Length: 473
Image (cartoon, rainbow, N blue to C red; front, side, top):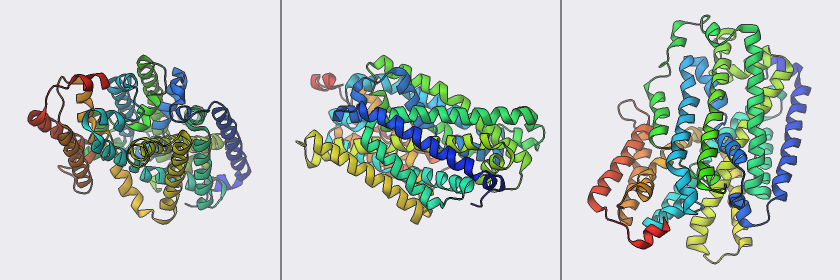
């Protein structure tokens, strides 16, 4: 990415904004570290997290560079239809929370595979844990890349150095402070996202007018509410169909609060907080389409900000993008390390491991995944897109059918059938990613395949659970 003229002239301000943000992160992480005394604190914040803090960390885990830079990129290319992305994701988060968060918190489980194992056995536990942990490598590398190139454009710093430094910082506070550090830093990061994009929006409106004023300066197709196309729209709708946020990265946060009601309330509050971000980022993309047409869509919004806005707004934008990326990655690494430690290491390798040994494994997995994603970002960028595509089809859609049966059906499918359903859903989702049907997103068709497989297994093998299974639920 070329360095932007205005960014070059204000490089000192950009450096200072990044350094100030890092200092704030370190201070907030230290607060989390001081509250972390046991393994349960590290994984689940001692199940005592306040509702407001859980709401912020849930929302921050959703709002990454995809919902910020990505939505701006889509608006630059396709117009106002990009606004559906954060709206649908917010609705999908709300639906996922209502369907699963309260029941998950009530179960007392720490991971989704742990809960599945109570009904379907350890093979299902291992399969679900492995797929759920591995899927985050691609998106983590993608977040690193976005941050590296934005910092390079703003400050001239080598993107490789920015990527490595950012990864080390994230891995460090996840390892040291665990759930509390992540929640506090997520809250700071989410506030920074809101401040950055709010200032950006109102600065733009004062000079150029609102969304509909800007739309009048663009071609009519920018006002088309289906402009992004069927494939993209079905990807977003598929996230609702699959209840995509019934995922370890989000439900682990729901398990950190005191009661099932708190889990639902915090999740719904998070969904509400996500919605306005899309309006701000779509506005930035549309404004870029007016003022700087013909650019690479990936660089259009950063180019607009650094070249056309006051340095104070540009500095806020830079820290907002950093915050958006970090707030996703820390939760992904933490949840993946939890899955590997509790559902694979503890169940199959060392069931009698002490808390100290479990913590050591969690730290090793966190560092390995965090730095492995750095290697992907620096060495094998071509693989990142393919891995990101697999993230959502290897997500909740592979197990959501069997999981919902545990809570909402008087009958259960057999453990063998559940293992087949999840395996077949993984295979089908992977195949549909590379060979999509009917021009639809594999997130949608993969979710439908998962539900269809569950329905077939239900018809063939369902029976009433015994008393022990009922108690475990």
